[in-house]
Image (cartoon, rainbow, N blue to C red):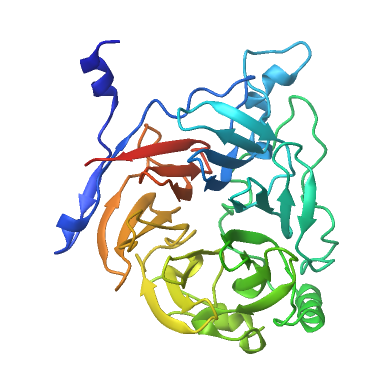
Length: 407
């Protein structure tokens, strides 16, 4: 391949700058050479976790159970097609795009990697894995049962046993609903069961309740931050060495004891007033200057607090966004001051660039589509030490991409 042809592959990502501060917004190019094709006839499922390690290599957590029958025909005996085979749920990819490791933990949501290489995966709690063996070496305490019934002992209680060549209903099953509304109709028996569960496990419960949305590590402080899904989402902080609970909070810095169990306090209409409590799908990240940015995706907002949970300010992003919401993953620009927030948007399929000081939008990148550099289910985002952006998609995307800064 000659030099001009190779340069032609570096496609400029669709970029729209907004507002008076557009000259400060960064620009990126889609990198078509990362990652390389996966080995062993693997095909990724939806990406539910993404992390860059100390060597700027990338860990990808995916959901193999998103794959459908037609994507798994190479698993049959004899195979009916050249592709594909379920991948391991955790795949390690180097800077050049090559797979350098993997292990097959139960699939989950949210992940982190520490400076020693241990991998933390959000499942019905946080589990710490040895990356070489794929064995669990520790886990955060969790409630032994779920709000909707059943025990929390099984990481994937609704996933059937794997059958070669047999896949699932697909990556949007359960996300899209038939006409008639989103959510269950009134059911007095179910409502009574939920009320009983919340009485048994109040908001102050010092363990993970429900599923995990996000994991972040504060290694200098030896702390692990987790966002569980209970009551619209709680920020929970644990000792990184002992996994003992330390503190937690809800929306507007509410102490755990102040979090409402009334679902009316989480009600939200896109474009309307903000709910009193977190609405749902809470993610977070911690800035160098010690602030916690908690993104409440289903309410299109980001709450900024101190590490002790004191509320500082609120940013609202694309407030008319419905369905999945706009404020997904939270990352920072790589400069020392972390001047910008990078926000992944599942519904609008953009990366938003926000001024970290005041939350003003200074630009956006990406549009919905299946071409390289576009997004279809933009779910996860990570940034390496060079400022490269990595993204992971669910729905029809089911891929990871890299975007390189334009200097």
